[in-house]
Length: 91
Image 1 (cartoon, rainbow, N blue to C red):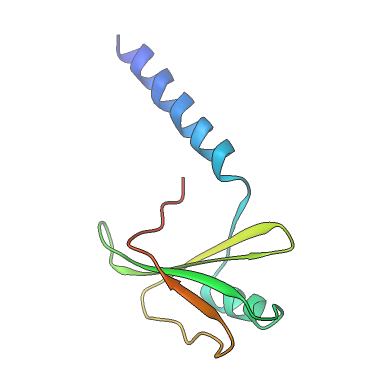
Image 2: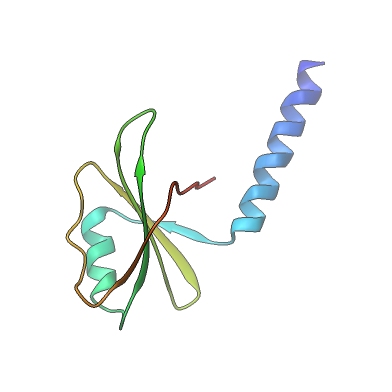
């Protein structure tokens, strides 16, 4: 019985990954460098809670989604459109 539930969980994770597309995880400094290459970037931000508090950021560039997580808030470019979300979920 446990084997079946594990396979079901794996299938759910695989489906969530397919639905979310390609997400590239970057270090915070690399994320900021990417933002400097984007004209008028759209950035989604959220505070993360459990298991560790911090700040999450998501943006897109040339068809890919880029994500980072930082313990301290990042200083975002002034020309950015910023959307504050309740949460960001990354599979």
